Length: 193
Image 1 (spheres, rainbow, N blue to C red):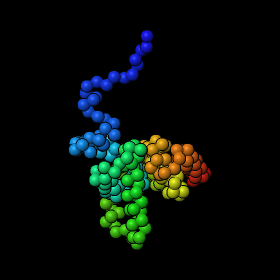
Image 2 (cartoon, rainbow, N blue to C red):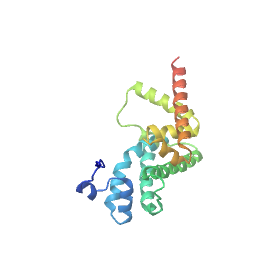
Image 3 (tube, rainbow, N blue to C red):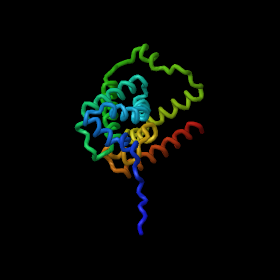
């Protein structure tokens, strides 16, 4: 006698696909509400990742919006070799890189732009100093370590997804992350001492 321990799906679960691949198939079949589900599922973590990558909330809002527009218009090119999450982060990362190239060409930032980017709720002075210190130290890391760290912490991506997005091995993503953490700890303790 064998015991079947596989989880049986209930009718409501079958009617509402929750995994990304099923939602992508639904969008390609013409169900726009499935794309809204994908946006709802991925927007927040993607927003955090892009905001950390750019350091600019307004730019992050724009990049995330452009990411989902590009994802929608190019969804037919999505190959399920990687997860939808990995694919969407790749799109966002490419848009971040494009923005960084454009920003390098700019000479100065107008005062209005700086004022618009200030937070509406004033954080404590200690939070501002700590946040600025961490941001500065992250910016001093080598590019790959910065990107892996941001994708892991603020993008909430698994090492496998980071590796797939960046075109590196999973082990390389783990090593870059751990080197970044070690360097950050060392540099932050040097500042205190």
